[in-house]
Image (cartoon, rainbow, N blue to C red):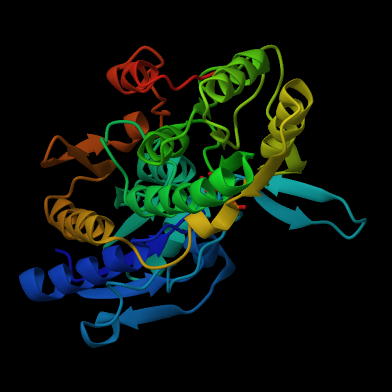
Length: 360
Ligand code: F6P
């Protein structure tokens, strides 16, 4: 018998998370008459004992269009590897998964809805294996979660990246420059590919296709021979040259992942050297994660949030909501947390190649 459920948002934020929270609260309240509480700071909040927040239809009223997550987001706080600071200054990692499951029970939560990416789904799956009642909602601007055609946040991110390219195009044309735009995309080049084609890029460098910079130089030179004196180059943060490795501006330490960055400037220097043309580099960074979700992301987040509540009612523990075609389905979290990469010989890449776009 379900009466009270919790919701948490794990990992980095994405536009649309607040719309999920709103849809969960409204569906739970209107359709089932359940109470919903917000768990602040993701799984970390469960184990570090932060206060739960009662969420009523009244206090989620204005959340639809608001970016970020009102529940807070942390990229640490993995209960499978909790960091304990020891008196001698060293750290120890302990698995507190069983305590986390117990804590959910102590808090009187009949089920938890976890919105997050692959890391959140991996944690949730482990807790489900230990008896927790959790369903998942897929979130990442990178759009790299398996088993769902799309994640919310992606549409907003590609709008931001496409608008950036549109703005770079006018100044590139005026100054006859090569403009390099570095976008997010840790393992997958969905943002770079989609925004790159939409924004008229001449070259798109993605993690799935190690690049040869000479191919990009040749493209820029051939455009100039044809009278096009500017070029737009999009680089995903996780892209790397053939035989090279992705660049990090913050190294990973302990349980915290390294932070990718630097490839845009590296590509910019290489292009300046091989073409002799003036190059400028823009790193779009967290602008892609911020701001109001697009109508499409609001709608997707709303459908996901509402469906997650129905999955709780059907006791579908360990399942994640997903969009396949235009249908909402429930898929095992264990399968969803695999990476969904760009198909390097698929129709999208082939279409881009047909337009003359090079991938290095
Ligand atoms: O996974 C989403 C993502 O936006 C990646 O593209 C990026 O590498 C990472 O998050 C950045 O995380 P943080 O907010 O910790 O800098």
